[in-house]
Image (cartoon, rainbow, N blue to C red; front, side, top):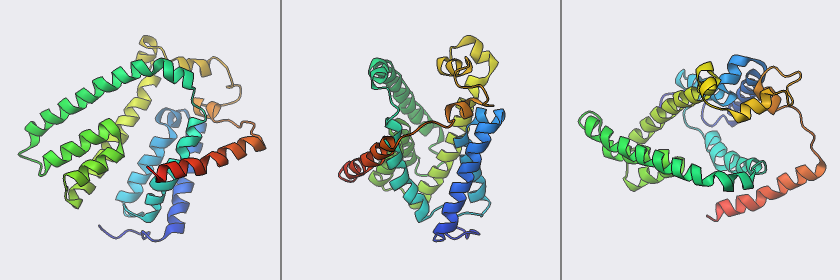
Length: 239
């Protein structure tokens, strides 16, 4: 791993960069239509890729581990507060079928890719297991497959980089498709149409700004949000 301008143990500076760049990404998403089409998450990801590959920030740091081990798990229950469980229960059947179809496609693609590239890429059987596990169950499956098949560390790192790059491109495509006139005319976009109908878009410049505009919050809301976190954290640690 090459040296970077900011060292992995410089936690204060790294946290500052993460927070500032995330804030800039959110601001761009809410103020400019081109950024709204890409989404703030993709802007943040692209910026992180540029900073890490240009040697400004390290590719590995305890700060990043804290994000994945603490921040992301704590964000999950906050996200679930907005979930409509009745709607999930009603639509889960369709989603389950779609998931099964996509899983079969992932496994089939992995098998075909292995036979096509096995003579050109070392440890492809291990990499294939990691990637197929990741695309059917997320990063936890990726790590489990890497440990199960004892994949060399340098191959794991290279696969993570390739995976993140391809997923960034994939997400950009997914974010742009619903905004294209060709697809808007042929496929319904009820959530976007609901926002565009005028509900809450009086002064906002983008859909993102309309969705994330300032909302009323009470002391009870803050207490309930914070009070749920320790219980979720405990259940997460006891898994």
